[in-house]
Length: 103
Image 1 (cartoon, rainbow, N blue to C red):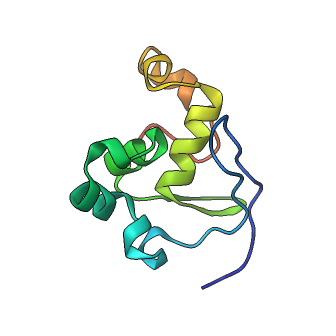
Image 2 (image 1 turned 180 degrees about the horizontal axis):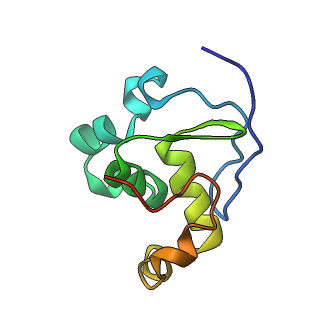
């Protein structure tokens, strides 16, 4: 695991993140998919829900960005799932790591 830190993403209500390991290296209980299976959808944050839709993170010029980090970045720019759902794809591509070509 790398201890290299990316710029922090700190949307309201989310803890600041400085260490970015790929999700597959997280403790199993903290991974969004496993959390959904074992604890149900109510246990997930909005960023984790977005991460499940994306399925994988991405790379930026600053380094890798996990799917959860990407979800947090989108929620920092558009503070709710409702607000995010009302945005045009072109507008959302301004968020670092989001290119609009997710699977």
